[in-house]
Picture 1 (cartoon, rainbow, N blue to C red):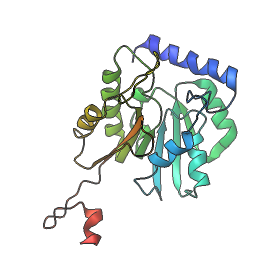
Picture 2 (cartoon, rainbow, N blue to C red; picture 1 turned 90 degrees about the vertical axis):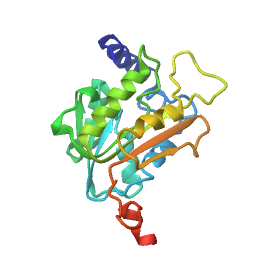
Picture 3 (cartoon, one colour; picture 1 turned 45 degrees about the vertical axis):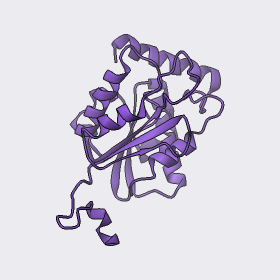
Length: 219
């Protein structure tokens, strides 16, 4: 992601904030919203009890709010975003109960490591090199997470695409995910034109049953 594109992204979301206030519209999801559904899907694969979570592209910390509403409380949350105004709002809302950082997620380092990394909506805008950005992000997330990471996309399996949005090819993203683990999930069962990919580092296989360890109990 080029410096110019980073600055354009910051300005885009700042303008939306001025226009729509603290809302889903400011986050770029449009009038239909559906952010809670996206959060529900991102949380669907793992148990976050006694874990740390990095929310990359956290916006106002809405994922944290949703997790707390769902009764997920025994975890450490770290929200990261490139928009200073979003981070300021999040810090004012949550105070010392969570950590928020003004940082480009591709510049995250060892101090930002977490058990899980979750990211919603960061790949939706068209760039000069979207695939390059996705690959760099996967590489960074894989290096920083201990248990797994999950990201969502707009799908290219659509009949209409706005000029400014990027629509990923599910098989291409799935192939990329397999570079990091054989234990992956692609969910395209909640909205027809969006999907979420989960890359699990829970990859220890039972030597006799040839299943991942968490599924031994079903044998």
